[in-house]
Image 1 (cartoon, rainbow, N blue to C red):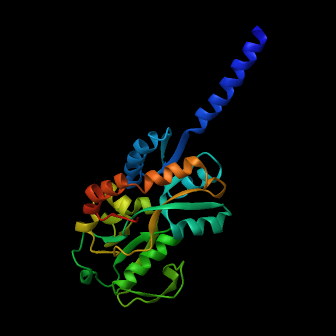
Image 2 (cartoon, rainbow, N blue to C red; image 1 turned 135 degrees about the vertical axis):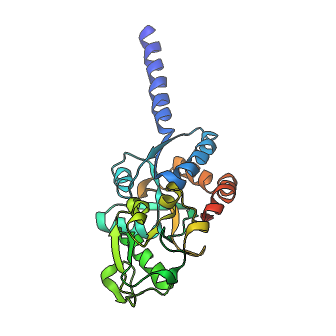
Length: 259
């Protein structure tokens, strides 16, 4: 009888432990505003019995690698074109499951106030990852500074007209705020601008419109997109609470909801 009782106890404990482990969700984020938004989501998924663990990264490469290698259950730091390019380059099967917000890319400077103050030969720093590099060049093109070949993943080599002979420097996105002392202007992602104390709506010389196609998305492995945990994460990420948080705290900084 004791052996039977012990066997039943073990049978009950093992599934319970496995279930408890499955209730943890690890999400990789970059600091601002992704970490802030996931802290709101953390409280919401807790109501569904999930413990959200937020893992912070300071670059745009590691979060996708960690997700593909199952060190994470999801990540939240990138827009769709960046995700698609990463899948193509690395052969990952990562999919986006929710659009959350848009971070307009902006041109910033500590040396000029208006775009027409840029001098001939001025240096402009832009992100060096493929999609944000192209996005930055399109922003400069829309501002009338340059013209660029047609195509999605254009680089500085694809500039066809450059009347001011601007010197384009492609640098790591996280380093761009620190280059403002050395260059005339820099195209900076909103999250890194915010970390540096820059307010996009106030400090950007030019900025992408709110209709930008570069929505930041919640990303998971393709095999997990229909799992209960992912569904709970999506529900929380696209909740009224998250939208209200964005409208109250982030819209003044240039960040808008994408749902």
